[in-house]
Amino acid sequence: MATKANLISAINGFLTAIITQAKVRSSASATVDEIYNTTYTENYYPLSTTTTNITTTISLQKRYRILFNKSGNRVNCSGLIQNFGDSILSNTTWLTISNTEFQAKTFAFDQIFIARSNTGASARISLTAGAFYVLDSIVVGQQYYFNFNYITND
Image 1: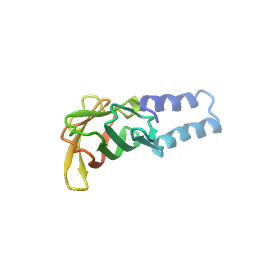
Image 2: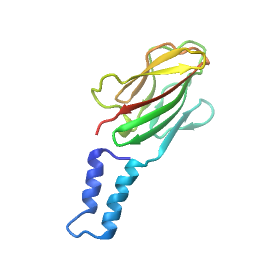
Image 3: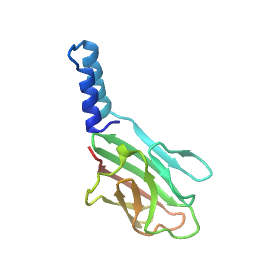
Image 4: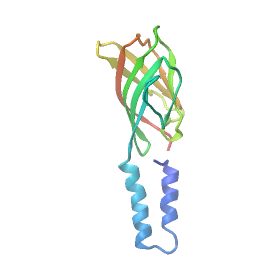
């Protein structure tokens, strides 16, 4: 994963005054790696499985399983969130996106998305820089599913 500036810098680093086949291959490989990248799966299940490379957990009451796939400055984000506690959660930061390459674009508007439960209930999710914020109430035990794309900084 790279930002636009990092990718250009990598390509320029390979393509110096003396250009060889190996440098051209390495430059092309850096571009291909950016287009066909790895999907990162973030799991946070309190007292069980935890895999976090992009996110930072906030609370034992908040479960999540999220897949992030970044290509250029666009990220596909899909997965689920669940209230694992004993009371309704609302208007709260669910997790922090700690990897800056995956953080939502600074000053971007309309980065609000809908998560839906299997009962038809819905909750709005807002992305602001590194915050994954739930704007509505999340009922105890209910899982909310989402799949959306957002823009990162270049």
